[in-house]
Length: 461
Image 1 (cartoon, rainbow, N blue to C red):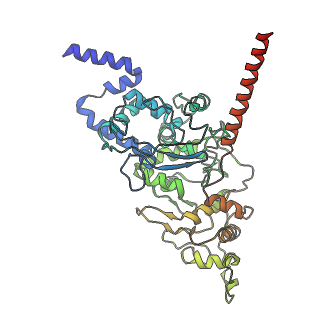
Image 2 (image 1 turned 90 degrees about the vertical axis):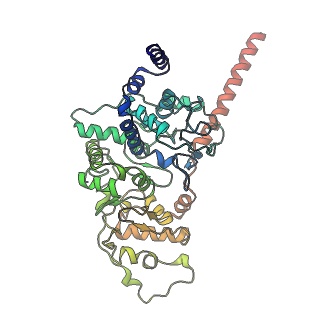
Image 3 (image 1 turned 45 degrees about the horizontal axis):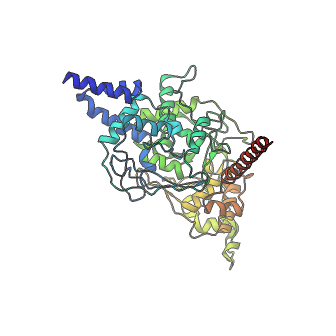
């Protein structure tokens, strides 16, 4: 028995890096249940279920359509199914997929899977995640829809070059003077919750811009705002308690309410974290390096005031052409019953429109997206429900209403164009990267052909 155990450990040492091996074999049998519970908690903190579960589908079975600027990416089945999922993965293969974006068969994943953040997960936590996905998740023997991006991005090997530029495998380092709680919040926020994936602006190659961590970024349709500690452009003017409330419930009265991708992150992950986890994340955010946008003159939550303009339209007949309705007419018809005539909100969870970050950013994309898609908090806590008006209001009406809201209760220097509304309704602007990549490959191919021709000509001479 002793020789058999020794042989097994020798094989493990050949298969696993020493850190992963030590984390894996350090768990005694009596602690395995607690290890599985830790893995489940880490999977929740990592928000794995959000992307790997399709609407109406089984947990972690994949198939969710993730719309990217390069095309639709479908999430994979990460249940322990041996025919459709990751049931045949070794711990090393699992770690490579999560940290480096390399599947068990050696093919590269696309960075819609936030492996650039997960690369910071410790060996012990990686081993616990592996144990949970192998032993704590029910296998689903149904293959997810395969991803088929257009050429040249259908060549997954190209991601190896992208990784060489953008994948940082170094462990997280706490900044000098950072408290232990804030350092833990940094680990939760970056390695697991992957806040940087959405909130850091990206360059033309879709890689995160260095020196701009958490400074705000467009997600194609929704806008993930600046969450650095800057008191004007970021969350420096938020208290720790306000940040905890927002992360837990999606509500920070007098400042913001969650919608879109942030709402989903709260629904699937953040609201399940304990209060100490959320407080640590808040402390980390308050300690981040501030990034200021010169265009910002005051915090996004500081714009606007009580403003009732509905008296100006009393007695006016509605135009025959509904696209010609004025801002006050549209607001009266679709918004005032919940947000009240003066924009002060209902006081029972439906927010005021002034002192509201949605109307105070230098982009109005979130204003438009909230009107097009609505806000449904999933039926937990205070279920804040805003119906989607995308099927009722035209692009012209959305444009008129959005500009009225901005002028009346938000940042009046920001305006919405009808072309942008149409673009957001269609899923956002196409990425120029596809054309650049194709032209770059064509140009590279021409250069190679010319070099071959020159060499052949020299040989003939």
